[in-house]
Amino acid sequence: GFFLGKSKQSIDAFKQIENKYASHKVEQASQPKVAVLAYSGSAWTIAPSQSFWSVLLANAGATYLGCEGDKSQEYDTEQVIELLNQADVYLEVNYREGDTHFDLNDLNPKLSAYFQTNNKAVFGCNTAMNGFFGPALLEPDVLLLELKNQLNNSNSESKYFQKLNSAN
Image (cartoon, rainbow, N blue to C red; front, side, top):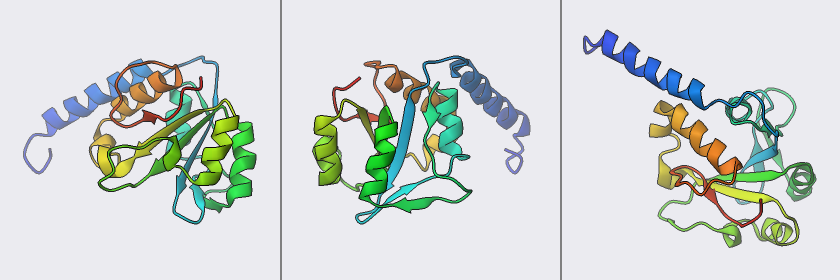
Protein backbone atom coordinates (compact mmCIF):
# COMPACT_ATOMS: atom_id res chain seq x y z
CA GLY A 1 0.00 0.00 0.00
CA PHE A 2 2.80 2.41 0.83
CA PHE A 3 4.41 2.06 -2.60
CA LEU A 4 1.08 2.54 -4.35
CA GLY A 5 0.19 5.58 -2.30
CA LYS A 6 -2.60 3.69 -0.51
CA SER A 7 -1.23 3.40 3.00
CA LYS A 8 -4.52 4.33 4.66
CA GLN A 9 -6.48 1.71 2.68
CA SER A 10 -3.85 -0.93 3.46
CA ILE A 11 -3.89 -0.17 7.17
CA ASP A 12 -7.70 -0.26 7.18
CA ALA A 13 -7.75 -3.60 5.33
CA PHE A 14 -5.32 -5.21 7.77
CA LYS A 15 -7.21 -3.75 10.73
CA GLN A 16 -10.38 -5.43 9.43
CA ILE A 17 -8.55 -8.75 9.20
CA GLU A 18 -7.19 -8.28 12.72
CA ASN A 19 -10.68 -7.52 14.06
CA LYS A 20 -12.21 -10.56 12.33
CA TYR A 21 -9.43 -12.76 13.71
CA ALA A 22 -10.00 -11.44 17.22
CA SER A 23 -13.74 -12.09 16.92
CA HIS A 24 -13.08 -15.77 16.08
CA LYS A 25 -10.66 -16.41 18.96
CA VAL A 26 -11.76 -18.89 21.59
CA GLU A 27 -10.97 -17.76 25.13
CA GLN A 28 -12.04 -20.89 27.03
CA ALA A 29 -12.41 -24.25 25.35
CA SER A 30 -12.26 -27.98 25.83
CA GLN A 31 -8.63 -27.86 24.68
CA PRO A 32 -8.38 -30.89 22.38
CA LYS A 33 -4.74 -31.87 21.86
CA VAL A 34 -3.68 -31.59 18.22
CA ALA A 35 -0.65 -33.09 16.44
CA VAL A 36 0.26 -31.33 13.18
CA LEU A 37 2.77 -33.17 11.02
CA ALA A 38 4.09 -32.98 7.48
CA TYR A 39 5.07 -36.28 5.83
CA SER A 40 7.96 -36.19 3.37
CA GLY A 41 7.98 -39.81 2.23
CA SER A 42 10.46 -41.09 4.79
CA ALA A 43 9.83 -39.08 7.97
CA TRP A 44 7.37 -36.67 9.51
CA THR A 45 8.30 -33.09 10.34
CA ILE A 46 6.89 -31.43 13.42
CA ALA A 47 7.15 -27.74 14.27
CA PRO A 48 8.30 -26.56 17.71
CA SER A 49 5.89 -25.84 20.53
CA GLN A 50 6.34 -22.10 20.00
CA SER A 51 5.29 -21.77 16.37
CA PHE A 52 2.58 -20.55 14.04
CA TRP A 53 0.60 -23.73 14.71
CA SER A 54 0.71 -23.34 18.49
CA VAL A 55 -0.70 -19.81 18.27
CA LEU A 56 -3.34 -20.68 15.67
CA LEU A 57 -4.50 -23.77 17.58
CA ALA A 58 -4.55 -21.95 20.93
CA ASN A 59 -6.73 -19.26 19.36
CA ALA A 60 -9.00 -22.01 17.99
CA GLY A 61 -9.36 -23.47 21.49
CA ALA A 62 -6.91 -26.37 21.18
CA THR A 63 -3.48 -27.36 22.47
CA TYR A 64 -0.66 -28.00 20.01
CA LEU A 65 1.60 -30.97 20.65
CA GLY A 66 4.86 -29.66 19.21
CA CYS A 67 8.46 -30.70 19.62
CA GLU A 68 10.83 -29.19 22.15
CA GLY A 69 13.33 -26.53 21.17
CA ASP A 70 13.04 -23.79 18.60
CA LYS A 71 13.48 -25.76 15.37
CA SER A 72 11.35 -28.27 13.52
CA GLN A 73 12.34 -31.90 13.97
CA GLU A 74 11.91 -35.09 11.99
CA TYR A 75 10.08 -37.96 13.66
CA ASP A 76 10.13 -41.61 12.64
CA THR A 77 7.04 -43.83 12.71
CA GLU A 78 7.48 -44.87 16.35
CA GLN A 79 7.82 -41.26 17.52
CA VAL A 80 4.73 -40.27 15.53
CA ILE A 81 2.65 -43.10 17.04
CA GLU A 82 3.82 -42.06 20.52
CA LEU A 83 2.76 -38.46 19.78
CA LEU A 84 -0.58 -39.59 18.34
CA ASN A 85 -1.32 -41.57 21.49
CA GLN A 86 -1.30 -38.22 23.33
CA ALA A 87 -3.39 -36.41 20.69
CA ASP A 88 -7.13 -36.13 20.19
CA VAL A 89 -6.76 -34.80 16.64
CA TYR A 90 -4.25 -35.37 13.86
CA LEU A 91 -3.71 -32.82 11.08
CA GLU A 92 -1.46 -33.83 8.20
CA VAL A 93 -0.09 -30.99 6.13
CA ASN A 94 1.15 -32.15 2.76
CA TYR A 95 1.85 -31.05 -0.78
CA ARG A 96 0.05 -33.29 -3.29
CA GLU A 97 0.17 -31.47 -6.61
CA GLY A 98 -2.73 -32.25 -8.93
CA ASP A 99 -4.44 -34.43 -6.32
CA THR A 100 -7.85 -32.94 -5.53
CA HIS A 101 -8.99 -35.98 -3.54
CA PHE A 102 -7.28 -36.74 -0.24
CA ASP A 103 -8.57 -39.33 2.22
CA LEU A 104 -7.46 -41.53 5.08
CA ASN A 105 -6.05 -44.14 2.69
CA ASP A 106 -3.66 -41.52 1.28
CA LEU A 107 -1.81 -41.34 4.59
CA ASN A 108 1.28 -43.42 5.21
CA PRO A 109 0.02 -47.06 5.43
CA LYS A 110 1.20 -47.38 9.04
CA LEU A 111 -0.80 -44.32 10.06
CA SER A 112 -3.79 -45.34 8.01
CA ALA A 113 -3.86 -48.66 9.91
CA TYR A 114 -3.43 -46.80 13.22
CA PHE A 115 -6.45 -44.61 12.56
CA GLN A 116 -8.58 -47.61 11.60
CA THR A 117 -8.30 -48.80 15.21
CA ASN A 118 -8.15 -45.51 17.11
CA ASN A 119 -11.02 -43.05 17.45
CA LYS A 120 -9.16 -39.83 16.63
CA ALA A 121 -10.25 -37.08 14.31
CA VAL A 122 -7.99 -36.82 11.25
CA PHE A 123 -7.72 -33.79 8.97
CA GLY A 124 -5.66 -33.06 5.91
CA CYS A 125 -4.35 -29.82 4.48
CA ASN A 126 -3.14 -30.19 0.90
CA THR A 127 -1.07 -27.05 0.50
CA ALA A 128 -0.63 -27.63 -3.25
CA MET A 129 -4.35 -27.27 -3.87
CA ASN A 130 -5.58 -24.67 -1.40
CA GLY A 131 -3.14 -21.75 -1.36
CA PHE A 132 -2.09 -22.38 2.23
CA PHE A 133 1.31 -20.76 1.63
CA GLY A 134 -0.13 -17.99 -0.53
CA PRO A 135 -3.54 -16.38 -0.01
CA ALA A 136 -3.95 -17.98 3.42
CA LEU A 137 -1.18 -15.79 4.77
CA LEU A 138 -3.38 -12.79 4.03
CA GLU A 139 -6.49 -14.25 5.63
CA PRO A 140 -5.51 -15.63 9.04
CA ASP A 141 -9.04 -14.89 10.20
CA VAL A 142 -10.37 -17.42 7.67
CA LEU A 143 -7.77 -20.00 8.74
CA LEU A 144 -8.75 -19.55 12.37
CA LEU A 145 -12.49 -19.76 11.73
CA GLU A 146 -12.15 -22.86 9.55
CA LEU A 147 -9.88 -24.61 12.04
CA LYS A 148 -12.19 -23.73 14.92
CA ASN A 149 -15.19 -25.05 12.98
CA GLN A 150 -13.42 -28.29 12.08
CA LEU A 151 -12.32 -28.89 15.68
CA ASN A 152 -15.92 -28.35 16.79
CA ASN A 153 -17.25 -30.93 14.31
CA SER A 154 -18.93 -28.33 12.18
CA ASN A 155 -20.16 -29.42 8.78
CA SER A 156 -19.24 -26.08 7.29
CA GLU A 157 -17.20 -25.89 4.10
CA SER A 158 -13.47 -25.48 4.53
CA LYS A 159 -11.01 -24.26 1.93
CA TYR A 160 -7.91 -25.26 3.92
CA PHE A 161 -8.79 -28.25 6.12
CA GLN A 162 -10.43 -31.46 5.00
CA LYS A 163 -11.83 -34.03 7.44
CA LEU A 164 -10.51 -37.48 6.51
CA ASN A 165 -12.54 -39.69 8.84
CA SER A 166 -15.76 -39.74 10.82
CA ALA A 167 -14.26 -39.75 14.33
CA ASN A 168 -15.17 -36.98 16.74
